[in-house]
Image: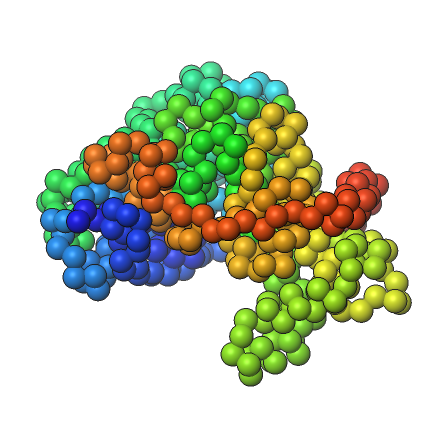
Length: 507
């Protein structure tokens, strides 16, 4: 039996899962690490915390599983996107990594937009200059820490640093590279034009590979530290959402998933590059060689429900604790007491500002239509519906780009709720499924490792062998019609409130 390792490098911790070649998880381990916030809106981590977490979790899954290291045929890494890792000539980090959720670079994003041009930047990199992306971080270090920037020998992304520690090789791959604002996404290469206009030396960037390419082998030193066999192939790997797509089988046209986690994502696969000229959704390179993805990113999906739980549902939390059940189970039961439309109450889920589809950091959450008739279960249902209306808006943007899924996979914490999944099916008017294996990004990374190591022929055939979908929830025509009336009204609310949001921010 061949075994494969998937390492999922997240923001809160690294999770490593050992799979057999059928996709069954054999053992898993997680190690958490700190997030540093030296100033309001900043977010940093120590790259060596990631490396230590990877080492420890690899050793633990090998030990816990009892699998002989020689039977592990490959390793792949899934990683948080956009973070900037700067290395000196010896390959040592020069400073903490600046993360995807760091918001310090608005000035630099404005500089990028001015130097490259908004339309030209989107045409080349498929995305506008956003504070989360990598290019703004490069300029921020150059502008604010010139003594550090002068020492930079290589700049890379989080998972690429861990892979470098495993293999001694400098590489980036297309899916992560497409989230930097520095990649020519159509031509799958670093953009000479953008690098020249931003005065960034191309020699500082690693060579690019496709996600399932072999990116080196475990070194003798890494073998001693991890327990793996020296010479074992390591795949280039993929950005977290792109790896999750592979781990859920979203690797061919017509496939898509919606994630309701802290943030929300609608993610669809496309054979061809499709770019939204307005930049409302992101276009990235897929982990499937030569293909593409289109995805939205909303900032407060599950976070909106968590905010409501923590603020208004203390009683439900106490009752759930006494019953030994998840509080969200009781909250779903409460929300189900309210009819579609929550007794004519709408919620805008902009608690953290919003990225997709409105691109407005000044926007904020709102209940519209609140009256004395409303009870807590109405507000709760309105929150859940508002989150799904937001996802529906993003799905409509994708449809306008001719990226049209035939069915939807539900992922993330929200996918555990049959109530929320049925709402998704009715509102999207399409079947909604889940997958049997819930290891998403780690499984996707392991599949990439299997392709790189020759265990699988290619990604689509590997997914066909490994991914098992559960029976779908089907949409109801009457419920879809009821939701549609409220959705059309929902779409008018942000434009009506936009000026007020801006005025509030300026006060």
